[in-house]
Length: 272
Image 1 (tube, rainbow, N blue to C red):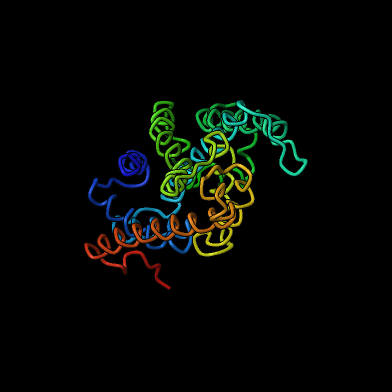
Image 2: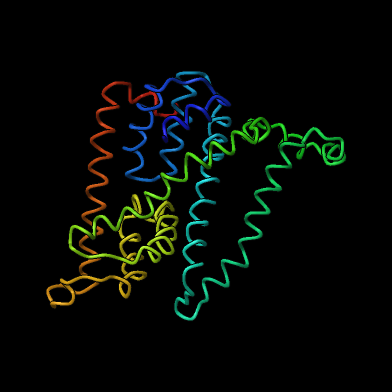
């Protein structure tokens, strides 16, 4: 689904085939082991070298997808909050989320409507400023100017199942320990863990992801291993999360190495 969506979205930057998108996505997994955002940059470098595509157009396309992911991740937490009232260390998550939700959703809707109506004469007064006129015509915003409502519908519809699986997948690592985190809690707190681990604090979020997992789920995990005194909840979460992390990185590396063997690694390096 991810590759098919990229093919559909990258038409705003350059035309690519399914095989090419699959290979580039695979190679980006190698870079993603270090940092998610660096992997996104590799996309832009690759398409510049192979298709003479504008780096700004490619980054704009990736931003188009990433903003939708952010909204879906936030929505996951918001839906989870509708099933329970959550106070974390005295901080009312439900109240806070409900306060910022209108700003997020209305802001995104206004953003979409703004770019769909950018040629309306009502916006002519702001175009007289050179810097604003330059920004409005910049290639990084091309996809927002040209994407139709159908494109947004396809974007959210195709990303929804993938985001849902990614957020809930950690529970499968715990199931191998005959343990489980309440699904509401997974979809409430794991989006926060995911967002923080994409920040360039540590390589691929190693350390920060495990710390947050223990912090959020240590009182929300059920396990016979803990009940029998064989493990503490903290040790269970740390061990399972590290093993889940290692398995994830091994799969990324294996697929990435296979894909890079089918193309040139120099295509992902920016010339200096």
